[in-house]
Image 1 (tube, rainbow over the protein chains, first blue to last red):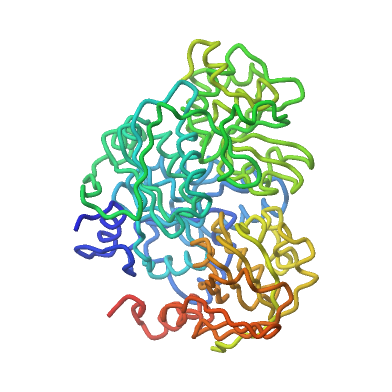
Image 2: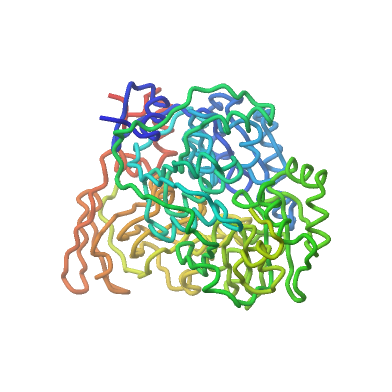
Length: 427
Length: 173
């Protein structure tokens, strides 16, 4: 019987010839990532000391301060300082602070190795699936177990297959693809399962866009969001100075899936997830006219270079609507510098955008531009739970960078294709 | 481990996410302070109504969203003894087991009413609603998860394994 990518990746991690969905395995971890908010400060530092245990392999451990950096309060600053001191005391060389959301840093520094197993104390660690890497989020106590043993028990997940064909219309992006999927299968539609994304549309997407899709797998409850590594994966790793050699792992033609979905993206249109659930997905045109106070472009979902380019195409020569604010947080220091060098940041700033530091802050409502009671925001991020980006009395709409940029210009939700046509371009 | 739990039900609906259970703005506080705000996003009065040993009864996909372990830790701090739900989100489910907070998947959880007194046999997956005499069957916890719970979670389990230099007994034959 054929095997899925998930089964092949976990067989490799468990050192077994083969595994099948439902098996419980002990897997060797290739990379363990901790962030500031749920890293050493929660259980891990204190209990590692009490256990009088050593970290199994310091070179496989990465610590990234991103949620509370730059800190907005003294408590946040203390947490970052604690995390920094702990990493140093533990002899962890892979320590990164203030350079952007952890998943983008892992991508740029080559920790999402195709074929490897990555665990992280952030649910969006599934972003690494875009590199053909079994990458998943875990809790802090679970991380303590990994640090001490280098291992984790996992149930081999069943897989759902999402096969995309056709060419995206101008103004339609990877974010619209994954919102369509989550809208169809629901917020818990892939719970405990792996989502596997394939087809000519996926192969044509740049890595930036593939990461957006894998990133949101957890919003359907999935354990992983897998895309087979290919020449684009190798080129991305090489461009970032990382080892780009790997053995490609793909699903067998007769692999067994829980369910297979087919999508023709030629008919896909710009979508928006309405408050307060990620699966409340509507065509942007159906929500057209909804007033927007704040537009946010950033995060591990929607702050990459191609996202800023898509926003700039709409914002070039236009202005953010009076009464609306546009906040842009490039997803890493590297992206920030690339966007500055190419003039993208100037285009955005000329349109009235406020350019922020690379950080997780606004996405989870802990700093860098929160929403007030009664305000509505539209965002390229991954969650629109009640109170996610500020007041419990605020509303968050999720959309692509093109749709968010168009909303900022109009001061209300619009179908961004209107702007793409006017400017004769778009994506 | 005491596998018999008795407590009053606090009812919640579907898709109670981790941002509601453990709102991000309190995550920079200590665990004790965080516990005072447990479930605040779903029910602002929860901490005040909660008595130690009470049971949360919820619908589908309880604990969706973030990997934040502060969610089960805040519930434990608030005194929650058990969560019964129609289904759980994956990371939250593991976090509960790892922190020693028992969880049961029960397809008929929706029939239990707010304030009902429940008597639960965790090992057997049996829930008796003492307020009306009805019985509800829950999925039985796999032996390796019961073992983790019996050690108070992953930490107690790790201590035992480190002391005895044991391999992970749940997967090593």
